[in-house]
Length: 175
Image 1 (cartoon, rainbow, N blue to C red):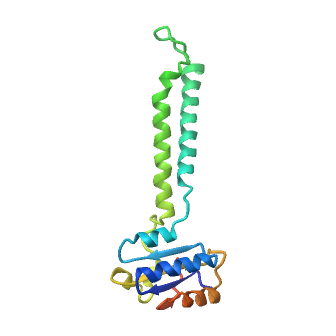
Image 2: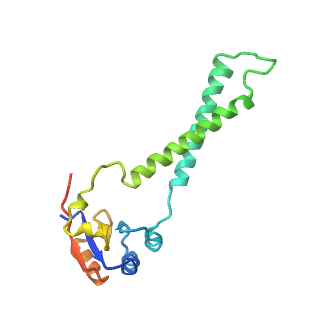
Image 3: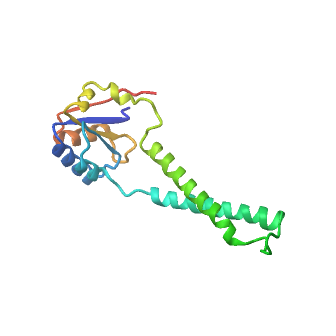
């Protein structure tokens, strides 16, 4: 069973046109491999990100936890009256609350980018695909993942041929 198909294209415009055609047919799990950065390809592949919401959620959660912990320790369990202020004085809790919110939001962003960008692995079995080394010189490749709900090996191969692919490869299944 194929876990993905790779299609090679001659230039950036052909790749962008193929991405738009495949998106119109319901494909969502697409990945492009290029010899240089291309804004048009990036725009064609981009879907709205949930990363800002995730960062906001974990930042607020960490800030609330930091505030609650400070209140518990300084205002409730071990209250100290210093300079005539009450044990629970919110202004003293602001710096740590803010810093913890920013820290955990940035941790969330860092980990999510590593995870979604698949940067936590050292190699990808796709690199052993015959002819794939041309991506470093002059060819453009498009990957359609089997995780896509619209993926059917025969139908996807026919769709890729229809988009003008120069060649279609089935990469070796790796670990």
